Image (tube, rainbow, N blue to C red):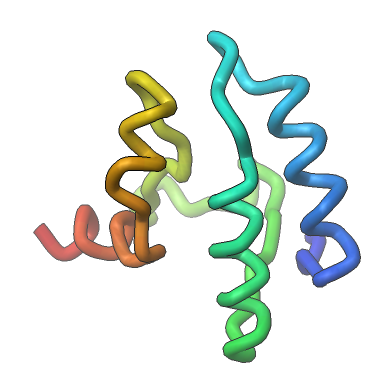
Length: 86
């Protein structure tokens, strides 16, 4: 298990920009969202896949399509939650 901290966010953003499949776009907005969540006292924990129960409810945190759309309509951080509630 690994708890993401403020110190980790910049490194994660750089790695996402380099390793993002398909050319990905700029990770800047995602970095700002993560920093805001941490500032609000929320936590993010990275866990090994084999520790996830078979019946667990999970969602992805990626995107697809033209990266410019993400700049035209900025995410607010609630999108994965809305998917789970739908």
